[in-house]
Amino acid sequence: MISFADFGLAPSVVETLRLHGIKEATPVQERAIPEVRAGRDVIVQAQTGTGKTLAFLLPIFEKIKAQADVAQALVVTPTRELAIQIAKVAGRLGEAAGITSLKSPLPLASRSDETSSAGTAREICAVTPIELEELGADSTVTSSLSGFDPSSVTS
Image 1 (cartoon, rainbow, N blue to C red):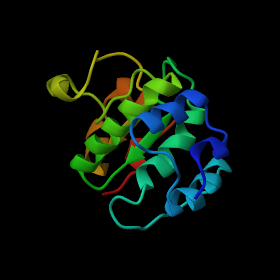
Image 2: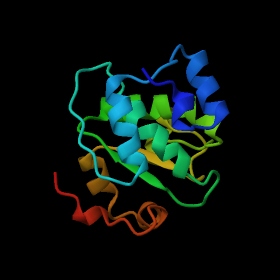
Image 3: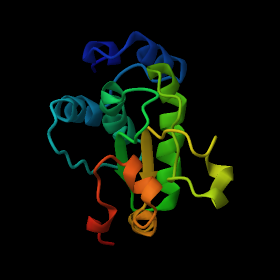
């Protein structure tokens, strides 16, 4: 198995993973992380618990410019529960990468229980296709997605 340090991740991220009991990459991560880092589109199908979430989040962390005024990564998931799960993982690990304003789903005023400090930058957003479609009319949200067109998403 490959250690996360072998991927050249920031030492703070490697240490945070270690503190969460994650010391070596899973086979899914070994194969996917280099492909994602190279900018290739990747489709990964594997059982629950095989490390798919970290396989795409860790390369995203490397590209995020912390404290930016726009969303820089959009994760579209089939279920709201998965979007929330991904946001929780990103929140726990993102702090070590200097990413402090992770939110999911894209915040609506009525969802304050799932978000923090509404109105601040959202470096990573995790949503379902329906939520993305519903938010398409919100010019504040669409402008924060920096060129992403939610109307292009079909459910």
